Image (cartoon, rainbow, N blue to C red; front, side, top):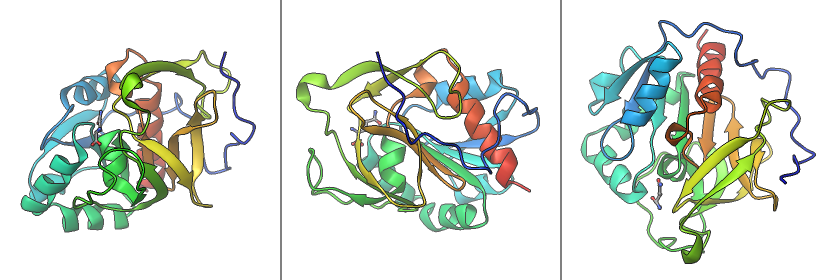
Length: 224
Ligand code: GLN
């Protein structure tokens, strides 16, 4: 049994998922490396239009952007090589929503902690969300696992079965960061700061669209 953490209180500006129509929203998925097809399928299911992003020009007509799971060092190096770091920074500064899953979370985190393997490597990143994260820090014996979590935006719904694969561990979050979900032991596994969202797990590998729906609701909310 996972006990919902007591501080999962939604701020007033949090949009209610499930109430909006997402048709016409164009969501880019960084497609340099990693799991982008599954994200695309889930977005289509919700009525949004996915688009693969490889070059700066691909960002032009997007409403939001997903940085998928994969290998954060590879994603960072390729993003730099393809000249995407600065255009993505501008995209986010312009108020567009971005969601990092797993390696994507590492890519967006302000700080990389020293514990966890790979902690000493600092690949090119876009440190836009005020969290500190440790890579591969759930330990070798639990490389991959599943856990029930209770998303803050769906307090009455059934638990969300979260899939973790060599997942990063969020060690701490800054004051402006809203916790969206925790593990039973209190570990934060999903968070949001303004229009920037991160999940340590892979919602695109489940059949449950609630995190994608929540992201689309952020896109709509902040894209005014
Ligand atoms: N372990 C990977 C990293 O550190 C992340 C794994 C994932 O995205 N599933 O980049």
